[in-house]
Length: 157
Image (tube, rainbow, N blue to C red; front, side, top):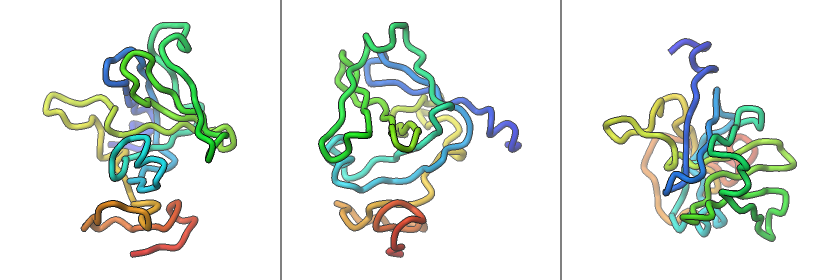
């Protein structure tokens, strides 16, 4: 795929029931498997594949008023990060960092193709593991593992 096509690629996502939908476009700022304890607790999972995009790349696509379909909350540890949860199915759909001006989405909620694979996965697949020190499972892959954010903390392997 050409660099121009990558810039124009649109990724669509939704909550479980489809009441909350969004689209993000272009190349992500970051794509990693996050093993932080906050993601583990919010997703009830050992890790999440989180993908970060600039705020300008993110758009809600469900019916307006958008706020009618989701509730906004933040956790005590990160009051600057607004999280969006569907009022119907309860799934966390995205988050917005008010201090970094970016949205984060979880790969598992992105649109799938007829083989049930995430569309254009090769353009957004994770490039690292972050917060690997608090992992619940070991991952035997070639991706670098970081204590914190990729490139901003000590590399573990």
